[in-house]
Length: 351
Image (cartoon, rainbow, N blue to C red; front, side, top):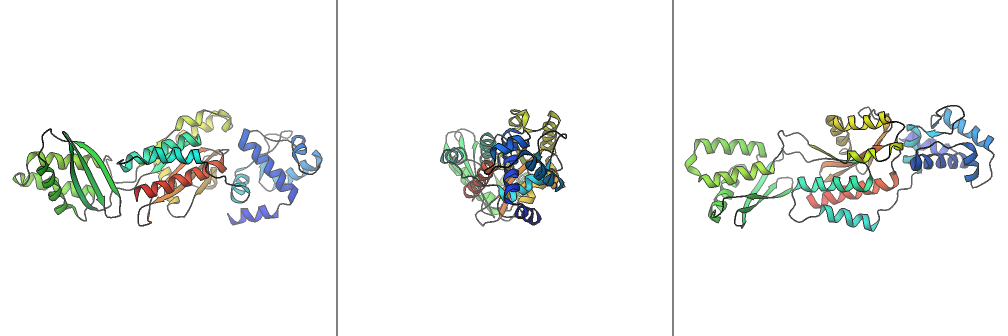
């Protein structure tokens, strides 16, 4: 990335202005820009012939390309990376967008899973891209479980993990279940789960229940099983990826050069293990990360970009990442602060 920024500094004022106009036009319309149009936009008079010479130099440097000889120029993936790294002015998140994200994500008593789904649904809607999130891994050791009687037929399950995540779920229990049974279920679990992962705790408790049925009333057993099963919906303990808003990518076919590239985006969304690896890359660095086209070996789809940011738990440990995937001509200046703010909000809510 350093070499790209150095290249920006090497561009003189006229070249930089021409390059800026070409990229701005591409991000807005997806269309190439020719020398005659550029000559009318320049801050100081410059002939179309001079502009063509400058564009030819930038094409030789790999920053621009043309569909055919007489066509205008478009930025290459290298050019887009250079623009994002050194010329892009990131906008500020609007107050209205901030309120929408806060309202959708900050529901009282929501589970981590529902918060994540609301976050990417909102992010997808505001960005017009497909949103995705890497959920926290479920192999974290448990610290405490509590069953709280709410009303007839319902109970609140509060689960606290050792890394500080608090998960609340509402479960159904038999009508008329004595509160004492819920208390006994809490005591039973807490005496056996401390330091174990959810899967380990479930396995251990299930085995004990089979061997010592007399230890726990049948109703308490149901509460225990329902509470844990409701909290851990995944069939494995690997990182889970939630994707939302693929249909947004079809709203503007001009976003990429042809429908085949849109299909390639959908193929990328289906290859979840590669997306998880990409989001994991975001976990190794602070702040927002941007992947453009084939510059990353894990994301070799021309015409696509991905913006991600990690989120942290209460101990400032990175536990997941959230982001969007869309066409390379996405509105970076608007989407970057959207992703950044949503990731920080998730960290505060989960923490």
